[in-house]
Length: 532
Image (cartoon, one colour):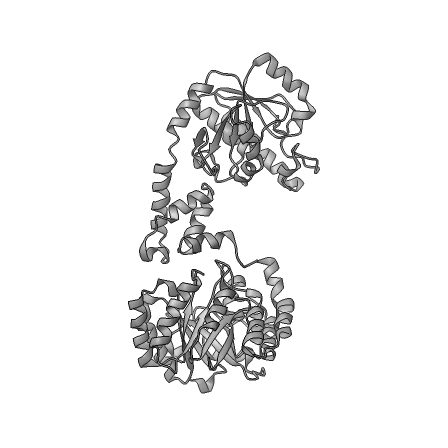
């Protein structure tokens, strides 16, 4: 390999985290430290004609405006780069290179507009810049489409063509497949680049794989300080620089990069963390646009298993081209087909209507007022339903489960007592094996206007009223104390609320109980803030 280069894009890709508002001092400091680190290329930010110039942001309305931010700074041996998302900057806003402090411009584009984008790249090249063709979502290209792009690149001869793993989908074999096609067919003078994302926690590993590829072509890889960047973040610049120093004889000053991380970047991470996460893993493992995952997760009616079931129905190019109407339809179809609770409702109606019902909550009053609870049970012989817990002193007939985390906490207890009571679960909770005794459609029991849309107590009351129960007794539904006293007998179940939030939640439940009261009587047999 004749030459390896490192490109930092903290001020550009990192800007997705903070809307490019780094602050002028941070922009200057990051730039100066990167120059001192001897990184070959520094991407100073985005160019977007819809944005106004702001010295505190690394996003600029035109190329010449970048001069206001960095023209007076020492560039050292670094090449200064800007990025344009094709279609967002008219060519008239790209001044000739002799009027700009930029050495190069990277142009990102999706494969469907590659012909128009490559013509635009030719125009920028004619203005005197080194131009990088950035192939967005490289994994969406077929071999034939990539060869078509290569044919255009060989005619225009941009400075570099870069593989952009926009959604972090590449594993090493996929990356090397695209790398080999580009290396074997691109003009030998065109540099080959790679931009990683960390959805599968493979950004660093894939950069190493790329740098291990045997070629005489010039290559470069991207990184950002502390991996700062869109979604799951990028390959950390400090890691790849360390690797290149140790394995490829480079001489990057890692201390300068670490100083930038500590002084200029970590504050943003504290406020808006980036990096590997379950959310972006789900998107990457389904080869789909993250907005599909956002749409389904924001419904708050689905388990992860159900989210994956819906995403699996995405097909072809629609996977990476977000279509809100499509995901709406898939969600609607799933709710109708997969979460049919008619049978469960009918069986619960037969089993519970006309019976005396006692609901047991996890509040401390159950143990503090145990004698009153036992007396009630002895006198009324009710059907007992616990919510999201298995009481230690009272044997329930049913356990109502609405919370996936609570289910994990009590799963072993449910297994031990599988023959002692039935489990009624809402459809957002799933088991690893077998099925629950009764599964109820989660979305039908929610209040989407509430601060806590899935209050399990109110959900069970709605279910009981729906099936025809007219009267219930309640124990252990203490409400939320406003003076930091324990609300639950099990500390693992505690929430942290301010006194104001506690009062608001209590008032909300009281209001909902009043709405349910027509033809439905709720009696509290233990102390409760919900009593009026």
